[in-house]
Length: 251
Image (cartoon, rainbow, N blue to C red; front, side, top):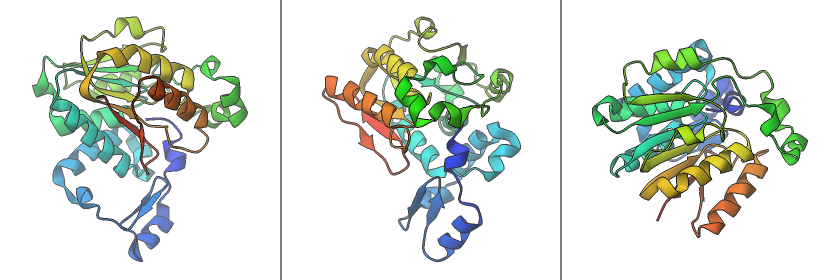
C-alpha cells in the first residue's frame, strides 16, 4: 500500500457526520449512498483488521475498506484460476495480509504469494521528469520506513508467502512463476510499474487479474497514461474504479 494512502484517506469526524446524513461510506476519496453490506461481513472484517494491523497504531486513522474490498474480490476471482499471486509494492502489506487471511492462503500451498518491494521506500531515481514536475517524489519524501522485519513477522504463519526484497525491475529475474493468477502493482512510479506489468503479463493466465492501486488518483496521471498505452498495445481495457484503482481481467 502506497504511503499517500493515509493522506488520501481522511474520513475523520466529517466522514462520520456525512455518513449520518445519508452516505453509507465516506472515506479514502469516495462517498456513496449505495449498499456497503460487505462492511458487515465477518469474513471481510477479519481480513481487513489483519491487513490494517500491519500499520500498527498508524492504522487506527486509516479507512481504506473499499479498496481492500476490491482487492479481496480480485484475489477470490484469481483463486479460481491456476497460478501464483504477486504483489509489487508492499510496504507493510495491508492488501496482501488481508488477502491471505481472507483466502486462508496457507491451505492453498503449493500455490505461492510473492511479495516484492524494497521495503524501505521508493528509489528517488525511478521517478521520471514529468512525475517530478507533478511533485510525486516530494509527496512521498520521508513517508516510508524500513518494513522488512515487520512484514516477515506479519506473514510468519504463511510458509507459501515468499518475501522478495529488491528494486524493480532489477529483482524481477528472481520472480519467475510459471503462471500468475493475481498481480497487484502499487509502486507510485511509472517506470517500475510498467516493468513489472511487462514482466508478469505473459505469465498472467486467462481470467487472471491485474490490480493497479494508483491508476485513477489525481497526480498519478503519468502512471495512468503509461498503463493506458500498455493496455492498448495488448487490446485490453482497464476498468477505472471510484476507489482510484484500475482493474484488468486478462482475456
